[in-house]
Length: 219
Length: 247
Image (cartoon, one colour):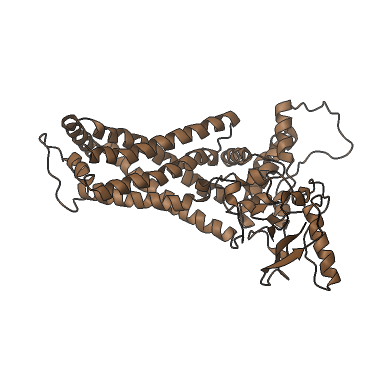
């Protein structure tokens, strides 16, 4: 049961994070609107989030999910390596499975790197007040739009966010469909639909998160 | 045809092993891979060298005894095939073929290419049986089973326990094997009385034996000689949840 329990924690927290990403990307789309509208809307949205007690609970769930997902993935990887201590001299794994499915750990580390840098860029500055002080906009809201806009005027950050959206998409593609299977979803036709949904979801997330910094750069 | 075989040689369970090269001549394309190994062993006997230890029994692809990791694939380069069904025509003249034993902590090497797969027997011992009356065959229509259920149970029952799923899995997970055994019996009315205990006890033993977690790479269903689907693993997980709730 423990093998199953550990994988269920990874699957459950992963699915919660998948839902969060949909909300996050939807909000990011505000950045695609003309500046005068998007600044006001984006800042009001972020103020609403910061002041909502419900979002506070969701935020703690989010921190817990990221921690548990990472911690259990590390435990599972460690135990899996112990289960196969000797590797093959020749292994053609690419002939029977996708590269993504064989390298979820590596992809996960890249996604974690992405999250750490992302949190340092926004969460640490806006929520913890670290780094340069964030100015107010005309409506008296913290000008989070400006923080985003100025960050994405730096081509290195644009490249970082855009390139790391690729491993994010790959991780989501395998992760989403596997999470359902781990949690017992075994309807044959449903699994075929799930496979397509996972691909579409991962593509939308990867392209969405990857392209918005580029658009903001050229705005 | 002539090939170079790079074969894992290991004297015993605690000895250090290594890949050793053998040039094997006078082979034909119609020889099975195991016959090529027999041929090599005959040459080794003539040279007064120790023969290569490997397992086989039926040589018809149904017993699950043979199992070699050939050129980076469980049971060789083809999908859904046992080692004994592999023929030399799958290789080209002059090829170098690397042959290794199944690698998993739960499958310790006994000698050369032979591994101890008794961990599978111990998993089976935890519930892959039914408590029905034995004796003469019962009347076939006394327990009605739909075609869909019967097909599903038969598909899972096709598992020959060769261990290719464990061998190919990067995590050495035995989830495909265990799920096939659980789903085979849990799908049928005869297996219902012990269904929850079967799911709980067999998966518990699977962990106890040191097999890893299933991460759904899908490699196992490709290498499985019987083509057992990984949907079985998802179904086993559903049965586990049900068993845990009901218990």
